[in-house]
Length: 135
Image 1 (cartoon, rainbow, N blue to C red):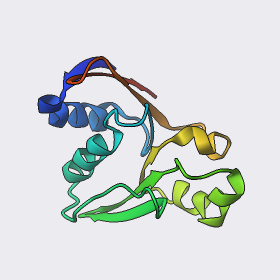
Image 2: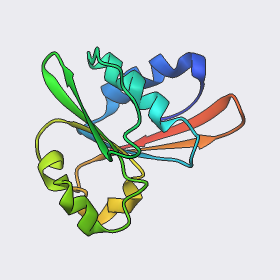
Image 3: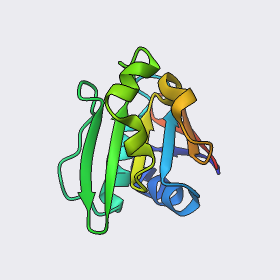
């Protein structure tokens, strides 16, 4: 999937990601401020998460509960090496069969399973984004 969208279309983009993703682990690539966290909040809502969601910038991972599933939202920006990821139990999360939405996955690239969905968001201008999903 490759599309351009603006913020008013974010619900539609989230629906497309959930429909087209072949995996429950989704790695979100994109520069700071491109809208990764905003998109993940919409995805969580569409999965049925009723809790207030926020970026796990300092906690590294937030856990949310949907009616029939669990969602883990990772922000790996502050992870400096693989040992830090092991310290938070990253393998337990990744192999739990729960949804795992990972921001800054390049910080833990070697630890990710092969079967993941990669989403890349690029900023075209202040209002327009490009998204590319690859299974």
